Each structure stands twice: as structure tokens, then as C-alpha cells.
Amino acid sequence: QTFAFWDKIADGTRYDKDYFFYVTDIMARYEFAMLLLSFVGIMAAFILGDGPGLFLACWTLAMAAIHCFDPYKTPWLALDMLLPMILVSGYGVQKVAEKIGQDAQIPDKRLAYRWLAGGLCLLAAAQAPQTIRLVYQGSPDERHALIYGQAAGDIRLLTGDIAAVAARAPEGKDLRINVFASTDWLAPYYLWNYPRAGFGDIPAGGGDADAPLIVAREDQQAALATRLKNEYDANLYKL
Image (cartoon, rainbow, N blue to C red; front, top):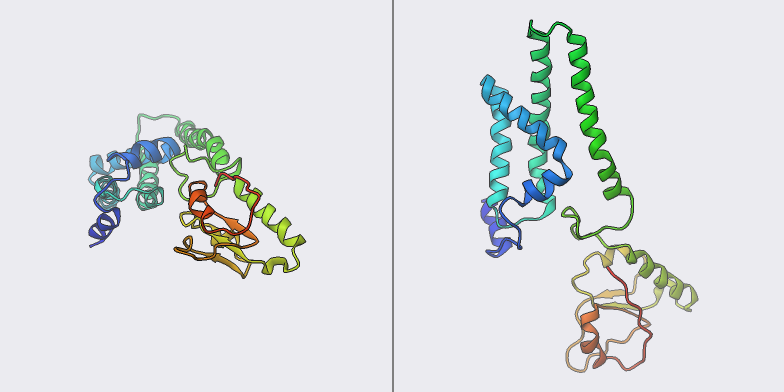
């Protein structure tokens, strides 16, 4: 039922993403440490034939297979894969540690444990710069496969300019704002403290679209021109 639901949402398309989008574009680029460790855990589970390990391995592989073949591919669904990957990765590290402790051919076990811990720290350190860059620095860049629906840096310029206009207007934050950029579904979040901000489509026929402030997409300018009675200064923002 779940698969059928998302297949229907996708409307029979794959959003131009290939079958291995989650593995090649998400996991390999942004979660390569988890991808490597989960591979270790899956191999350990099948080699040892351990019940809990096999459960985690099969869960991980099942989630990967389902989402690879599910037509609906968006970055947030990678979370369904990450949970079993994290657990099977921990299982793999545990089994490697147990192997070190039980293998008589490893004379210096303390040194081996240090090598294991050092390798894990190295994996985390190698991924840290990219994580910091992606999460904390700069504006969301849609060239990153993980960026999905986040507003670009110009949203701060837009909201700042709106606040500046509201500060000069007699109505203050009660001034009317018409938002016609219907695809920008983040707008209600950023304009939550403007009670007279309205969201919808450009009025059809002889409808009046005028307001002290209008937010619209660049490709809506021609349609808006036939509905506006007043003249406006236009600023362009990349959202």
C-alpha cells in the first residue's frame, strides 16, 4: 500500500532521477562513511549468519531496493534508508571489535582497537568539512542533491526589503501583500507575521491584483501586467 501511494504521487514518473539516485547521488556523496560501514555490517551478517545481523542486513537491503524502484524520488526519503544503515553499521563495527578480541592471531589487541577507533575517527573527520559546508555555511545550492525545497540566500534580502517597506508604511506589518508565486510554498513561513499577506493565483478576468507589495515569479510578469492598475518598482530575487 505504501509503495502504491508514492507511485501514485509520482504520477508514473521518476522526476528525472535514475534508479540508483539514493546510492550514487545521496549516500555516496554525503553519507559515504555510513555507506562503507553498512557494507561491512551486511557482509559480517551474511558471513556469520547471525540472526539480529541478518535482520538488519535484510532491512537495509529491502529499504534500498524499495526506494531504488519507487518512482517517487526526493532527498528526504533517504531517511528511510539511513536508519537501518546506521544500525547495521553499528553491528558491523561491533563484530569487527569482537573479532579483534577473539582472534588469537592478533597479539597486540590494544593496538588493533586503536587502529579501529582511529579509522572511524578518520571517516568522521573526512566527512565533517562537507557536512559543515552544506549545513552551516553559505546559501542552499540546488546543485547539491540534498537541497530540496529550501529557499536560497536571497530570501533574506526579500524579507528584509519587505520589513523595510512595512517600517515606513502607516499600516506597519498590517499592510497588504499579494503573493502570487504559487510554487514558492515557503513564503507563508517567512511572512507569518504579516497578517494581511495573501497567497493565491493571479486574479482571472478583471480581478484586481494591486497591493502595496506583490511577490511573484519572473515568468508571471506578463500576466500580472494586465491585472495591475498601479505602477511598481521591481526587484529580482533568486529564491
